Amino acid sequence: MPNLLGQPHEEAELCLRQSLNIARSIGSSQQISMAASNLAGLHYERRGDFEGCLQFLDTWLEKAKVAGDDWLVAFLRYYRGRVLLQLGQYDRANRSLATASQVMEKLGDLRLGLPSRVWSGLVQAYLGDYEGSAGTLLAAAERAREARNDFELAMALVVRGFVDLLAGRVETLRGGLERVLEGLDLLPDADVLHSWSGFGYETAAALHLMLGETDEALQCSTQGLRMMESDPAPWWPERRHFTHSRILRALGQEGEADLYLRQAYDRVMLVAGNTQYQELRRSWLENVEVNREILAACAQRGISRV
Figure 1 (spheres, rainbow, N blue to C red):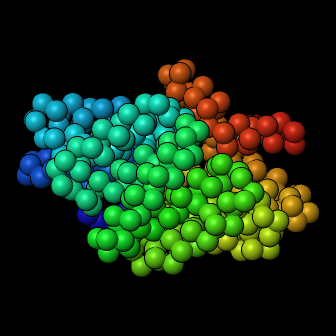
Figure 2: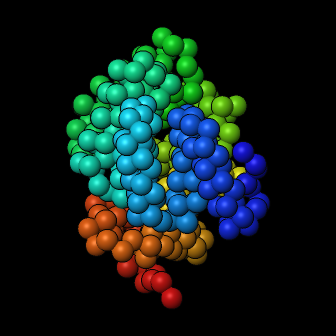
């Protein structure tokens, strides 16, 4: 696949769709999965079109079902669950990810079975089942250690720390931070686009902030933002900008904090504007806690879209 960094978005999209058509023509499930995930992330998610991403995935999911390709069906359900999670459709995401994980493990695919477990653990936390989430992520981490799979182990550790952040229990924040930092140590060489590393640094920054360690928080947050510069489709950019804004405000840098808050707001409203189905739009704006916090902070500061 060609390097898409720096290419005009229309040209990049054309290359991505061509790679998917080529993969389908040679009948390779794994190549189709790679091309589909690239198109989903680098095109749809980058532009904030999660609804379009779901429609794209559903189309290919039906094709995989018709072809009787259980592995590809499971992969597409896995990616679909990730998109539903980002939209705040947590029950639907949980079902999709659980099904994908079960099928992948039944097929003996540990490489994808573990990421499915990690994302399942994350959605459990969003549903408020912190103990169940911790158990899922602990099991994923143990299996990754046994398989000597550092990348999946890092994923499990970073998400486990993020779950401690979501739970907000003072007594577990330090342990959550230690897990995230351990995961980050395992990631640099393997995380080519900095997706997990950037997410990890933002999580570490938010944990430092909750622990009252603003200087350390700023350092981690700045690193996470720096990684966005070489990532064509960074995960949760609204979270990164909002966390950075909160850190700057804690340091008394009100003007700069407002600039990052505005960027977080613009991303939230970009996705909302691209979402025509009202249930999904409400879910994005109301179910996703960080989006509610961003909108509330903007209302307090008098920031709105011009």
